[in-house]
Every structure is written in C-alpha cells, then in structure tokens.
Amino acid sequence: MSSTLRVDPANAEQAGAWDGREGAYWAEHADRFDRAIRPYLAHFLAAADVAAADRVLDVGCGTGETTRAAARRASGGRALGVDLSAEMLRVARQRAVAEGTDNAEFVQGDAQVHAFPAASFDVAVSRTGTMFFADPVAAFRNIGGALRPGGRLVQLVWQEAAGNEWFLAFTRALAAGRPMTGPPPDAPGPFSLADPDRVRAVLGAAGFTDVRLEPHGEEMWFGEDAADAERFTLGLHGWMLDGLDDDGRRRAVDDLRATLTAHETAEGVRYASATWIIHATRP
Image (cartoon, rainbow, N blue to C red; front, side, top):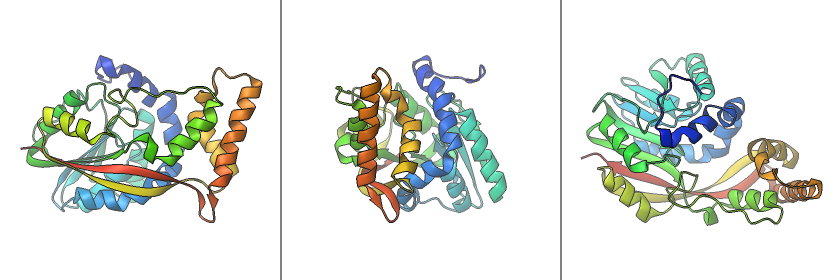
C-alpha cells in the first residue's frame, strides 16, 4: 500500500487487501471480472442516466469499465474514478488511453475520507464498490459532499446471500463441511448493503433523501467451462482452503468442480445472482 495514500484507520485492512494481493488479482483478471458482472451494466447505466454535460464520480471504480462508460456518455463533461487499488487503477488508465477516453481520470483514494472538491459532481455511481466501508455513514456523507445540491447517487450492490447462487455454491464447496460464517450484516463485506432498511437508514443518516431500491437478477459468467472456472475461482477464493488437511482440500476442490460442472452451459459456467440498484438524492 502506498505510504502516501490517505486511509481512514478503520479501513486499513480493506486498503491492505485491495492495494495488495486481492487488487492485483482483480487487475490481472480484469476482463473476467468485467465479463462476470456485465449482464448488469446496461441496467446500471440506464439507472445512472448520465447526461452529456455531467460530472461523474465513480466510487470503487476498480479497472474502470463503468468510469469509461460514464465518460463516453458525459461527452461534454468528465468522469473521475476513485479506488484503493493502485494496480487496478493502472489498468483503468491504460484502457482509457487505449480507447481514447480522454475525459476519464482516476485517483487512488479512500472515498470515506478523500478530499473531493465540494459540490463538484452531478452524479456519483458505484458498481459493487460501496459495501466495504468501515463507517458507511461517514463515507456516504463524504461522497454526498462531493455532489452538487440535487445531485444523484446510484449504486449496484448485492442482495442477501440467499439470492446469490454463486456465493452459496462456492462457499459450501470450499467449506468442506466446516461451519463458515461471514461478517456481521453491518460489517464491511459483500452483503453489508443487502438489507433495504439498513440502506435507507445509512443513506438517511448521511444526508441523502428519496432513497429507493430496484431489484435485478442476472446470470453471472465464471468461465468458459468447469476447468476454466475452477482455476479462476480458486485463484480468488483459495484462501478458504486454509486450515484443511490434504483430504479436506481434495474434498473441497472436488465439490467445487462438481458444482461448476453442474452449471456448465453452451455459454459457459453460469450462476444466478441478485442485486439492488439504489437511487438517492443529495438535497
């Protein structure tokens, strides 16, 4: 992690992961991650409704697919992507240059504390990038301060784990019979904004109004076939095998292979998923 990166101390663990091994893996496999969630992109961009002159802030932008898409729509404006991962931002900048998207910029920062210029954006967006704040109220208040009065916040977040077949299948397989508990629902994690009541409470406390949630469900892609998906999944979630003996590891990998094989289709390995698109307004 860069020694000059300003991070809220409560977010230090997240920063260490995203500006370390985890972020590097996402950067290396940028095309795969974008393809996995791409079925949501059209819905998300339609919800964001970026206009030609808009100034767009993309929170947790990763390798920048949504930032560049927003910049193309804001042809007379600009888009700024912010993320903790230097490696993912390197890929984002390279791709913006390769595409000729010269109104997209990228900055490394913790959106919970980053010093955004006040009231300088018309819309803030985030595609699965806002669920990991240690203090979400403070983070959304900071993001809200970057929006002009009347500015909009549009996020894509996961619904509860029960609606996300991919998460349940991978977790059960790699648990190898062990009880596997995730973080509490109000702690940083992929499902921290899954509860609509919590979303309304957090955004309301951060100063947003007109909060509404739209459910969306899509099939996500994880590989061309089971073998391809296995390599990718173990690269991302292999840490879950820690603590298992050889028999346990074999059982976990066998169970993972079985579920991936069962989800092979002519269009690759696919699992059901469920998200919310969250709208809110800065008064």
